[in-house]
Every structure is written in structure tokens, then in C-alpha cells.
Amino acid sequence: MLDQLVREFNKISYIPYDEVRKILAFTTTVSLEKGDIYIAPGDYSRKIAFVLKGLLKTYYCSSDGREYISNFQKEGDFVAPYFEIQNNLPSLRYIEALESTELITLAYDDLQRLNATSIFWADLGRKVIEKKLAEKESKERDLMLQSAEERYYKFLKEKKELIKRLPQNQIALYLGINPSTLSRLKRKELDMTDELSMVSH
Image 1 (cartoon, rainbow, N blue to C red):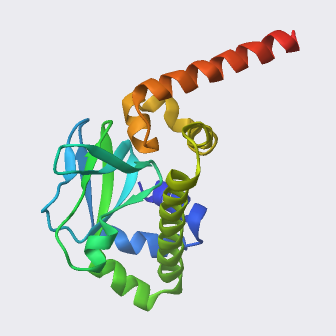
Image 2 (cartoon, rainbow, N blue to C red):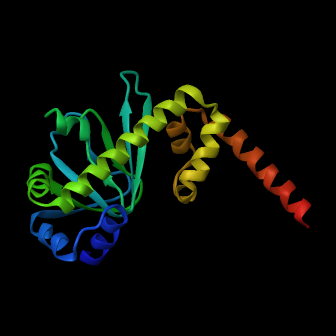
């Protein structure tokens, strides 16, 4: 696990091996099965989780039961109710495992102490937050300005590795389109692929 953490953290920001080793005494490993809820509305969690294995979704439910998926988290991603932690609130969201998942969790207060005493952790924390904010703004902008087709092709480009891991209805919910529209877009993509294949031969 230590080697995996060093490898994944260094994809974001350089952290020496010994620095990563230090946090293991403060971490907890959490195992989830498909369908398990890691965090639900009303839960009071001040933990940051790192995905060692598996896939999760973060989503909200409206009063009429409609689901709105804000993001998916796979291996190498951080997951937490960031807004609620910053504002000392109970969770407003669900975080659910879509596959058998293993997380390593660290208390936010412990992370803050690390950030205050180490430039390595401070830099990692800053870059993770910047990435989360950029993703959030990008999705909000896309929902307002892009067509369903544009959002779908962007998803294919940026999250291609998730296509085979996610049910079609989950992708549709994330993109803010209905499943029939997604089916039409997938058929169109397949038709275009077939045409290109015929031309190349």
C-alpha cells in the first residue's frame, strides 16, 4: 500500500517516501462492497479518503427523489464532502461504491496539521483542491453552455476508462441527459466508427 500511495501522490505533487510513511499511523482502511453507502446526508464526516481500488459516485437527491451525480471517483482520486468539512456541516450528499472499493482515510484535522508543518503536504493539498474546483467549474459551464452531444464526447475523451465500468443510466445522470438520448448518441458514435473503418479498408 505504501508504494501505491507514493506512486499516486507523486502523480499530483512530489512527496518523499518517508513523508508518506508518516501518515500511515493516522490512516484507516475502509472496505466497501458494490452499493454500500460511504457517506449519506446527515452524516458528520471530517475524513478525507483516497481510493486505493474501486469506483464511487458522489450524488445528491432532490425532495422528489431525483438523483444528480456530481462526480465519479476511481483509483488515485480523493473523495470527501469538502464543502461540508470546510463549513463544519453534516453531509448534504451521498457517496456510494459502484464496485468493490478500498479506501484509505485520514482525518481532516490531521491533514491540516501536516499541511502546517510540511511544504510537501501543503503543496499536495493545494493542488488537489485546485483540481476539484476546476472540475466543478468545468462541469457547471458544460451543463449551461454545451449540447448533450458535446458533453457526451467530452466525457468519452476525458473519462474514457470509465465507459466500460459504468452502467449507461449512471453516465446519463452524470451528463444531465436522459438514457434514450445517450443511447442515440452511442448509436451515432458506433455508426461513425463503422464508416471510418470501412473507409480505411
